[in-house]
Image (cartoon, rainbow, N blue to C red; front, side, top):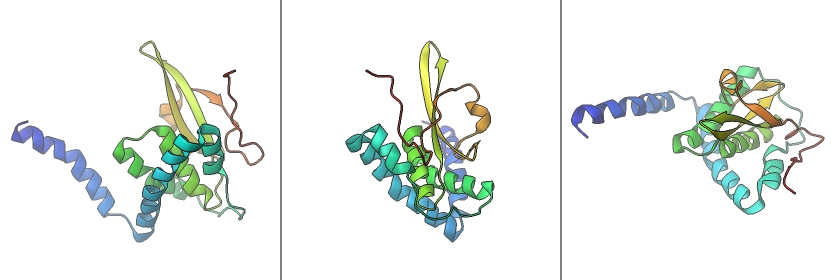
Length: 165
């Protein structure tokens, strides 16, 4: 790699570091909680399996949900998921970590898993919704996904439907 290529590779990293440097104290707390939550979710997925880990991540505290604007919840979701995105972790791990962080604040989200065909293969993606809107992803980019199941994360039924027999 020559010097010009090396410098060009640093530009995106500088932008990311600059974004992190501009965070408030509250933002750093949420970002740090995301750093702590992601390994717990990864272990839960490996040890407990998908249905139990999902139930644990989404189960909310029995406190009244805060009256926060959507923008605040989307920002919390972005901050909590940032460590996972920086590390290149799966969308499922990131979404469950964000769900766990939000659920500890009384914010109940619903996990969505969608699929779409891509280059002859089936591509899957996971994201969270709160009050009918996407909170940890770009809603426009999800239009091409067919949602497999819409019941994950509701208070009445946290179970996961499986087609495996």
